[in-house]
Length: 397
Image 1 (cartoon, one colour):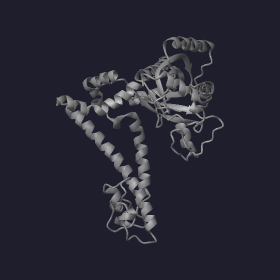
Image 2 (image 1 turned 120 degrees about the horizontal axis):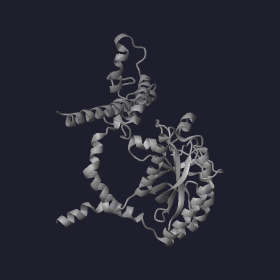
Image 3 (image 1 turned 90 degrees about the horizontal axis):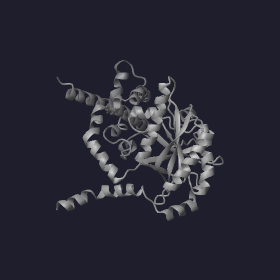
Image 4 (image 1 turned 30 degrees about the vertical axis):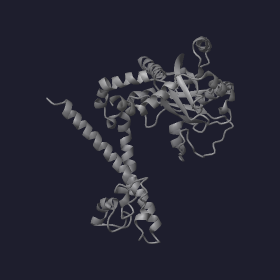
């Protein structure tokens, strides 16, 4: 009975583990067939995702952090570094690229620019490629480099104009020969601040490609403000797109990590609070300010004395007097919220024909504004409770 119970409970995890183990091997004939057909030549957005092995991630992060340390020790800014990716397209999931290993290159760059045009570097790449042909069945299928800029609101994982030029050269040289090329950008300083790898994968569009969706950013999001697009994705935001990154590991590595997590990494969870991270602290005033501005739009107008700002709580919670804060917003704060199907129009059939539409719109916007306030307050409350709990647990004398 015990054996059958264990088999049942482990059936779902074993499926995902088997899929991850499959990333470490491939059918040579199917891969060669995929390379010959090269379906990515006819679709600029053919690839949707990238699977990266743990060893590749560790080598990339170690290399990029070494550039930070080297630049700081010299008394200057962190240094950009570059390397090559080893991997292949996946015949099992053809819209996915697999990165199994990486190899640092002896290149040091400067802000938004890393170039591999030195003769020594080129010779190093040739010798490395020739040696790998004798020992590995995979090819160089991409490159990575770091953007070690100061930690800000947005990640610095984007492609600069020089990066786009480099990526297009690689794609033109390799894609037609069955070897689709990938670009990965690492933000080492943000990775250090967050305690987790901050990297993104990209492919460049051909120069003749025109995106049918206006103002669409590399991650698929539509941002109408030009300045916001530039801050997040650089001046070439329309020239490339982002691929979803996932990580895979073998069953053996998964077991080792599970043991480490149970025995050691639990201390990291107790020793850190997301609310206290640098990024969260920097974003908090901006989030509060924006929420206040949105709420201010619904301040009752034409009120004086005790009927002014003092009526705002009742307006938010759904006053029985109706109007803007009335029945339209009550379902939003009563557990409905986005995606529950409890729209204000379904709850207030007595709304007048003249003002019904405006009430629905205001109620929806007010619900969203209130939800933003609730999220900020909840994060703050949970963070404070966590900090107090840790103080009580570990600072008792």
